[in-house]
Length: 549
Image (tube, helix red, strand yellow):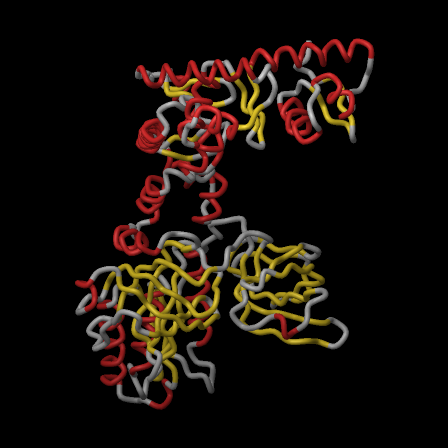
């Protein structure tokens, strides 16, 4: 990008010239062509030379490249052709294409036109849009269809990056859209009120940032009020370049690395600019301050930082491309030799992420065993609840630990191979009592409260002993607090198999007749058999399941 600076020769450099220069710097523009206007009003060549020298000095001190200074008389047209040639020549060298395929346009104007409906205008800053495409408005999150398109060249079927565009939208009212609205592909942007940013204040400014200070933030064509949270006390005074947290009063749809301006609340004055480092959606606020202080400004380093920070919730290649709005070549160059791309899950992660996840899962098993020493088998629901990771990543690590022979699948759950339970004499005695009671129950389903009352055990102790016997394969947990001995379960399955030799379906009454159980006990047991694929529920009856021989 480059700027056309218009400076009147009779005024020279004015305060607004310096402010505009600072604004462009904050927006990442550092190239310019200068048009010196009203050249007919000044005849003193020394004055003209002095103004030119001041301009070059100002731009040079701000690291701005000037391709040329053109003297223009707007009345007679003198110098205008030279200025046009200079701009066109510069454009040929500076053509820049969109970094992403995603369409994006910031709305700067919206109006209604008789016979057409709602029309929005703006500059396309990413991707391509065609007539008939479906677009989404952000942060409103409303979808609409493109009815028609226009550019400076007239009616067109397609607009692309860099075009000034007018979009005729179907079935939307003017009041639903306002200046600052972002037009994009459906599901591309995620509105938020909280962002981590790196900001720079204007050099030699008298402004000092204060915690919870209310400021004006300009994202694209949108102005939003918000407050800043400083990440460290040392940043509160005399620091013109720092990371901080911005809490906005209304939602914005911003991208990583998006540049914005900061203006004071009152009096309104440009005081700095910034770059979006991360959008905050669901982090714990106690951890955000530390994260904001540490997150790098450089995009590639930030990518590595985020991959390693959020090791429990890895993202896919597609998700990272969308977050940073980069193409395949760019992200592959970032990944190459430094991170791992798993083809099956699509996840991007580091070796350290895997190492940390394995250690965390082993610790979770050991913690569970410490609290529940008699329960060797952990079902997947317990592991998910304990770790609270991305579910697919959790299974990925389980498989990794399985391949390493650290954990194994056991009786519908998982066990840590190294875990060994040492039973005391008291444990052995009470287990024998439970086994004896199970024989007395005549291989019928029973409730844990029967064990508690008959053996005078505390609820947790009774549960621990039952889970120990389950891990040994002697009993099964049926559900709804019911348990059943393995011998009784095998007899029941055998009787069901015999039933299916002569009949195609098994009703509740059939099952009650086979087992001698009440409906209250029979229903949970039938649901258990369904879950094990011994039977399959079909309407109100059961048919033979795949696990029944």
